[in-house]
Image 1 (cartoon, rainbow, N blue to C red):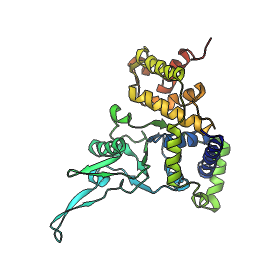
Image 2 (cartoon, rainbow, N blue to C red):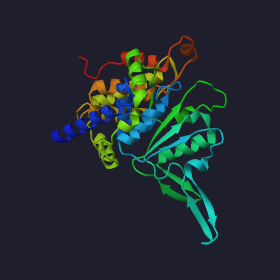
Image 3 (cartoon, rainbow, N blue to C red):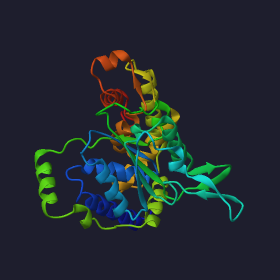
Image 4 (cartoon, rainbow, N blue to C red):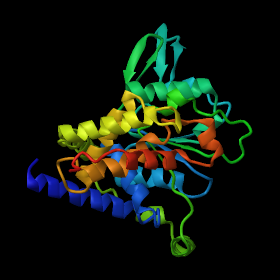
Length: 319
């Protein structure tokens, strides 16, 4: 990749993260990783307590990236047809007419509280996420490119929720958590909300065409064979570990490689380094493993287990 191209990408990604940082205070690492996920053409699951800025993060990204943004609040009565659309009979034309759903003509969809709708509706969205198209009454309708879903869920107030099945969680490239802000960040958040709407200050930094170019550039990043072997060893270690009941699938290993490429590009390189893999490994894999009952009873989280596994695998360049 040409040096000028790399520099332009580096400057653009820095400008995007700075712009999002006007709204999401003190969470630069999460902002970077959401941007990496979009560059890797993957979907994001934000799993956190209410009120920490999950929705604000999605709205800010939609505006900064110039993406056609839409939002759906999931409740138990949301139907699959609300997502993918439906056909109605047109008496004048004596035929059925397709009525688009919420995901049609959308680049960035916020699926708010995805765990508060029925399994059938969840499945309709997740199928569209995977295939980047919807099929209604035998007719296929491609989705707009790029198409990214940022889904949120929280475990507070579990009544009426439907936990995403493990196989469907696998459709998300990463699972991230914002967490509570530190004291200084929270003070700044309060002060910003006193006199102005922070979203009004968010500018559109790039266009959707630029986002597609960033996705193409991410795929073009080089990953050498020793690092492919390193990813393979990490994934194999999750399957053989005594802490896990179910390890990472090949889909997960591909996801790690794509996310590592985006990490390299955002760091100004056109090749993957070991630190890129280590930076994204837990975010890509924490929702893909199932820990043993003994491990869970000991209070070990998926991220803790993955960190231990990662530290147990030999570096590809160790002497």
